[in-house]
Length: 200
Ligand SMILES: O=C(O)c1ccccc1N[C@@H]1O[C@H](COP(=O)(O)O)[C@@H](O)[C@H]1O
Image 1 (cartoon, rainbow, N blue to C red):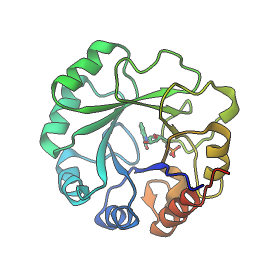
Image 2: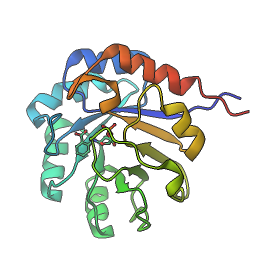
Image 3: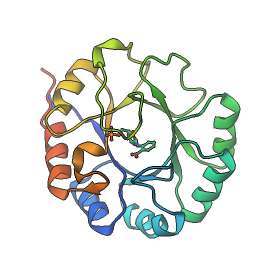
């Protein structure tokens, strides 16, 4: 039986990477507004967000950004979905919802504080965007469909899915030729590896 796994490719900063992801039919692309080698400004992200909006959901990724800044970035870029790595209470989620945003709450593996009302959970390793795997068998899978992240690449994603049964996967470092530089061939290899996974 073929398994349809949600795929997000994160940390995009140029037309070619966005076009590659859209051509491959990935479900979501991420633009990082947190302090990072992949950080992009709202002005530079806005045209990429518009470029992605053809069946591939653009997602703003935030860590260490005040809620006011997240709202301002969404308004400037047209983003309707945000992935936030440091939400601590349901009021923050409610403020984002009140602005009409779809909210992905990113947590570190082992955190059992739940979704705080967010629309989806993403479970990552201790250092977001570092390309480091974590012990996928060490955590109890959250209820419902959740997204697995942290050091995924074309060679380990099938094992990661088999170990966790995650609903979706998110990749950044594992599809780069050097830190912060996306490699279209690796993006294609990653997507093929996810789509080759079967449940028998
Ligand atoms: O990619 C970043 O630099 C980043 C910075 C701050 C918060 C999140 C970030 N990216 C997210 O990190 C995970 C895993 O990335 P990796 O594949 O291990 O490099 C993923 O959810 C990205 O969206």
